[in-house]
Image (cartoon, rainbow, N blue to C red; front, side, top):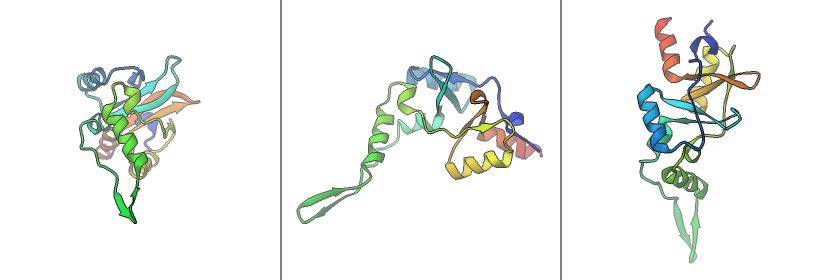
Length: 149
């Protein structure tokens, strides 16, 4: 049975929240990676940033739906617009990273990881041991394992 320990790359590529966006993009390109774990000064995992986050900076902004009703304007989904604007205008990794993390332990199966990736639309999953970051699994690792079976 293939586990996260078999799939992950170790040591994981990490960046700081303060890293400038351009530097982050160059690092991913140079290392041919799809993302990185974001760790604070103490080495604590605080998020993940991926090439998708970088691409989001260059997409068109989708404005919220607005309805006029009896001379009132009702707007929907302003939270989504606010987060889109924050990412699009971001200057550092902290501005674009995902801080709502889903992590797995080293013994998580490939099926567990694939399920998380599919259902939560995650491209990069941190692997932890006792709460400490030990590796990263991205979609290409899962595809490689599928192709090798």
